[in-house]
Amino acid sequence: MAKQTVAEQFVDILARAGVKRLYGVVGDSLNPVVDAVRRHSALDWVHVRHEETAAFAAGAEAQITGRLTACAGSSGPGNLHLINGLYDAHRSMAPVLALASHIPSTEIGLGYFQETHPDQLFRECSHYSELISNTRQMPRLLQTAIQHAVGQGGVSVVALPGDIAGEPAPERAAETALVTSRPTVRPGDEEIDRLVDMIDAADRVTLFCGSGTAGAHAEVMEFAGRIKAPVGHALRGKEWIQYDNPFDVGMSGLLGYGAAYEATHECELLILLGTDFPYNAFLPNDVKIAQVDVRPEHLGRRSKLDLAVWGDVRETLRCLIPRVREKKNRRFLDRMLKKHAEALEGVVKAYTRKVEKHVPIHPEYVASVVDELASEDAVFTVDTGMCNVWAARYVSPNGRRRIIGSFSHGSMANALPMAIGAQFTDRRRQVISLAGDGGF
Image (cartoon, rainbow, N blue to C red):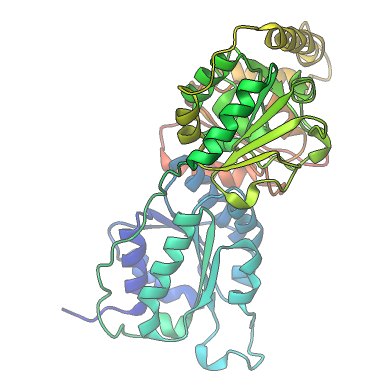
């Protein structure tokens, strides 16, 4: 059997990790890898016009599928263009492997044409960023990068000089088992006991949900029903928690609407579920707060906590539901639901009623019509700015639709690149890009 090149080994390992395509722009330092992809049956090369698009597309694909995705940029300016999309993917906890092709290994550190130091440049927007400086180093380093991206949820960057990529690999890469999914995390009994006591002692409890409630809709609804709690959400929690929710009181934050703000401030106990909601000005400072998150570094960094619980939202609620006492008094819940209905009627619906012939057309009305006409499993990608506002207020989630945006990084011009990545996951699925100037 003919010897593999390092680039062929690299592509083989990506394929074994479940990567389906490599988004990027060709360049001479990337040639060995692009050629290896061309000849590999399991991977496709997706050529884009700009490397930032490659990173945004890979991030969107990862968010929709939950699988590892990949993007690439050639040496120096090429891979530098990846950085904005990688920041977004990393802050969205999307597992993305970025290949930063590098100048010839013999020239590193000598001020060569297009020289940068990608292993250093990408450290702030990745869990792992390293340089391959030896052909024998590649398989283990790439496998380590994959484990970081999948296991910790975010970006890994591998810098690979073009000359090393084209060299013969010393041996075939060992068929090492790769991590392809994350485990669930159950909180400790002590934290569960303390949270049960806090819930039982409070007459008014509010739940505030983020993207960490993905896959836990049924548990959140059962829990809210048991303790008669209003359920508010952050923007990234909307698609997971707003639909089929009789306890919904809307969204808090800069784009907020409804009674979520009142519900979080007028309760006795606020429980933050899977949210790293950044705007502490919208969080109360005079109620008890418990936070549940699978990422321990998120606990307590936005508000003072009375209890920090490290665990998956779904696993935590499965522990809580049979143990908390069912509350009988619905007065607080019903009062918040009434406030929410009044707020929706007075503000959100005002721009979509009797405006069909209004000139110029209300963009809110456009968003509401798109929402009505879109498929039941459509993917919406939205640009930062007013498109974000309209999607937050007028696009209706249903458990099958997805709403993807630069919700944590806040980049401009993300919607169309994300739509490209979303469409590659399923050519038949409807993808709607709400694209427009973030400063509009």
